[in-house]
Image (cartoon, rainbow, N blue to C red):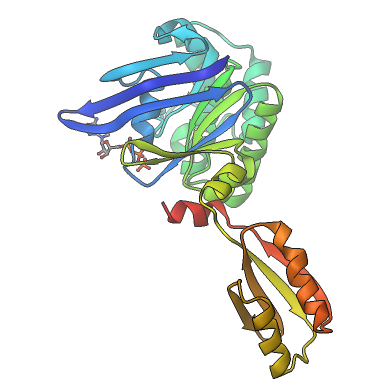
Length: 300
Ligand SMILES: Nc1ncnc2c1ncn2[C@@H]1O[C@H](COP(=O)(O)OP(=O)(O)OP(=O)(O)O)[C@@H](O)[C@H]1O
């Protein structure tokens, strides 16, 4: 049973359709990465799922509940694209206040546990007005986590935070997944998405352009892997000519004693190695450079 299911979900502002007929399923336990250039419609799509914006048309099902977001509010945690806080409250008081107004008070131990999880322990008594952007982001994540929700929407959870904190947040997301949570996140950090997301959707001008695991996306776009072969430094000119003839069906390039060959599949590597050993050339190292999500994304 999918945790998120949308069918032809669309949103227009005036006559401008910014989300066009998106049908998507996210299963329990996924870390689903939602990508797209600025203005692609990601936030608008997430806002419809979290009840911030009403869809113009289409259908959505969250946690097997039809449309009534109020009924499932406590099972869903949201880090919006922009969180607002009260400058005069501390992080701890903030979470207390947030729990109180949402009608679900939380124990001090739970508040401290969540602040520790996001890396804010030690700053829990500091006024939020004195927080940096990154610290506010962490407080936003704490707010999303405080009710121990099954499903989390995280809009750019690591944007604006330092590298160390970003790694901390990524580990936290992986930990949440391990504990059975489902995470739907938008991000412009493609390395991060590639590392932690189980599936990815790339949105373009209101449409889902492609969806799949990294492996599926690489296959779909038939992106070539680059094999870097470090050879002995004494390759003769005629040997290079012979290699070129033997590997005539490949695009090859020399960089000093490094031979670079583009392949469609790893299964082709033995053929290349065989051709080189036939020429009596010693191979010192073979490295396969897989195309990154960034390379796939930039081709969209
Ligand atoms: N309330 C609104 N009224 C009118 N247009 C809007 C509104 N909200 C968003 N839009 C427009 O919808 C389009 C999609 O915006 P959205 O914020 O969903 O994109 P995004 O993919 O989240 O972008 P980013 O990566 O910059 O956050 C943009 O052209 C934006 O100007």
